[in-house]
Image (tube, rainbow, N blue to C red):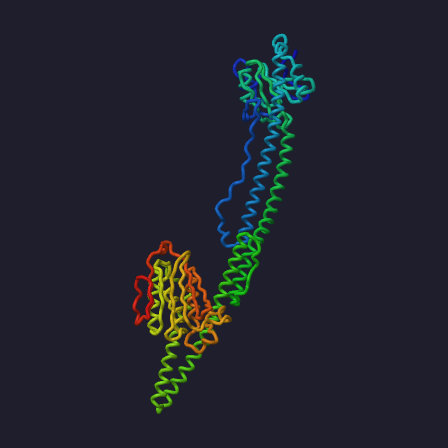
Length: 567
């Protein structure tokens, strides 16, 4: 039989000998406090019911980045991209290492709790089977069952019985003395017995190592058993894992910084090319500079748009230079002739009246030609100006107004007119100017007493056809008739600026249409203007047609009526 002792071999005084201080009434009188150097009672750790594993304290996660730092606005865009990429990848690495550490630590915690749960189950089952053998004669504790428990489980066993704490302090010897601090929870379980749930606590043993201790109540106010599972191996493993994770995190952050710098450099390279190209254009005014636009990403699209913009600017500059050069060339001839005639009139005061009148008529004609040329140049210079929005207008009225103005310039010509009424979406003034230019060409080249046919029809689009009886256009001149200032060889002796058909082409194409010129086999010139239909559409079901064939005298307007011919 084992009686309570007041000492343990190898110790001056056994730890915790005598009744446990602060125990409930009936378990013995309080004893003096243990001498200095002994492990003191520790506060109760967080209890947990078996068999569920103990939940470890959650590892703090990385704090989300705060608002953008003010200095980010003072550094280059590449530095900002590099920094943000590095921060993003670094946070991902840190988060991944933290998650991995938490997962491993929980796995190890789960293994510890499982092993401790198995040991508690084994001891509890054995104690129930041998409960009559736990105490001998006189209620003294039998040591062998508990020594055997520690041998079987391999874990330290501490017994709370008769107000004392007993532990295996030498092989095969169970003596009074604490191996684990006796906490308030352990005392409560001892007092309540089997009705108390098993509690898990992290305590420090007498050997200085950390243990996870499970306390099991066996006999109410008489017997409780504590089993400890050493945590040193788990703590060493977690410490090594923390070191590895810290090194991985540092390496990941360094790699993220390198990746961020590389990504920033690769991402900003096209923008740098754009910047260099813009600076080159600004410094040299060279619009032929381009940048590499290979690829299908947003930066490649930006590069293509930039190249297209430079191409458009270069084309605009060439057009402006060509316009100035052509205008200077075209203005030089009438101005030189005008100056010569005026100088003759100023010096030769004794010119015969016939010669003076001829010179004055020549000056008047040159002034008219110069006025026409300047007007055409002004119209062309307005090509890039913001024009008013097109609006639905009666197409036949636009043609009639142009006809009235053209007829006043050639009262001897016959105009065969057949116009289908209907709306067209256009800018009325521009469209009338284009139609008038075509009619002026027909008037200029038609022989006296000739006929000019004007027909307006609509099917899938509007078709305005103007045909004259002039000499026609040579095949070699047809590809160039819409060029600015182009004049055929046969037209250079005739008045004109070479801008009329260029204006026609510009106006028609700006309205979404097309214009073509041909020379029919019967002779003359045929101009066909095609414009899209308005949403309202013309009267395509045999509606009224304005038809007027007459030799107009002074701008009589065409009227609606049946088809007919006049002289």
